[in-house]
Image 1 (cartoon, rainbow, N blue to C red):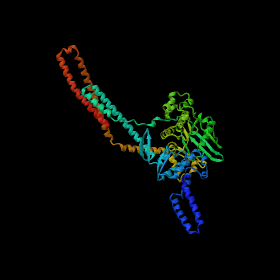
Image 2: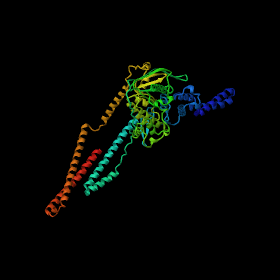
Image 3: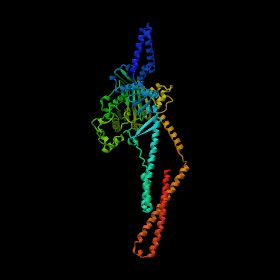
Length: 600
């Protein structure tokens, strides 16, 4: 309420005026001034939203995850994430004409982000957002300003539309660069040929073409960050089909129940995402699984190093399948030595790797040049996340436990991680608030709510569809049974891909301006030109060789004293020169025709 202090003062004055009205109820003269002041102030209080301000404050605080029991908490006792949410609440209640938000969805759970989306969409103010939350951007923005390789470009539309347009633009830019390179190479080859002819006329033409080449626009090769980083998680060995079975897991802290009666049945190659509000125990569940893996000796060495990760359930049983090996990625508790360099972190953990292998691995995670020798303590949060992911990749485990793996990663890194997780031959259990990441990778979603799981067999879009379906039976999902309308894992994504492919093919067919027969005719015509050019070059080479041989003969003493033979050879040289001149012109004409043909 501090930002609405003027309204609070007005409300206090209104209460004071009401008291005066009661006090001077028998004094009409005194009441007139009080009534006038009360009427003016009341109208102003209403126009500035005074009567709705408290309900707005309550609505915004609740929307951003604060319960009414927390309203009287001191700011000093709030966590960093809570303080960030409180700061965002203050901005929203101010309702400015221009709202500038830097990563507003950080520290928000999915429910709070959904509320924020609706709130911002209903604002009549302009909003500028910096965000890596692509699902959030898709639902909010109508323009995207993309800064790529020091250059900025404005796109109209949602994030998905921007992504598609950028991909097409990059494809066109690459095509333009390749055409430009081909044109430059062609000009250089023609110049070289003309100079090799070593005739006055051809040398002049070569110089003319050199001037054209100097003035020719050089198209810059498009930068593609996607080529710089490729992740491949490769299990050392394949686990059994039954990866994990847990029954009736329960956990409480300080008398507060996080979850109870939770059961899991995870199969090989499943990509399972756990979602739910903050504080429901999602990360705790991963710690419990990792602790049991440590006890059974199937956790990676790094997953066993931090004692605070050890967490046992209050009740319940956990069983891992055959040949299961676990790697645990925890964004907040990475096992990294702050004094180590990036290079040292890998070489210390995996001494069998040589320098080249380590550098290649780090380059895959965007650590190149001198960056490989930066100390861990100098790295940003995102850089530490990437380095920690690199170490997890080398564990070659077949069950990955990932806790918020996309935190602090830029969009390019997130997309590359998504591709790696999708192609991973092992099993993944992931806790994430990144709905775009979940939508791209999940084959099954478990929603942890009201202390228990609800099961959704599909990606995030499927989850939203079922949440909105009044016929969807959560009880069947809790027990692991899918409703009759539930598709098999991956079926939703497969059908969507099939539809996208059909639409792509339809657009491609529409884009073709030339029929097959016309294309065939053009290919035939160009081939004829190429054949003609080679024939002329062969003829020029033959005539130049003959001309050189005549020059050689004319230096022989027996020919030099034979006037009849000299006349004959001179006549032949003149004939060759005449034919060569015509052939040079013919060669250049055909070369220009091919050049124009390719430009078209």
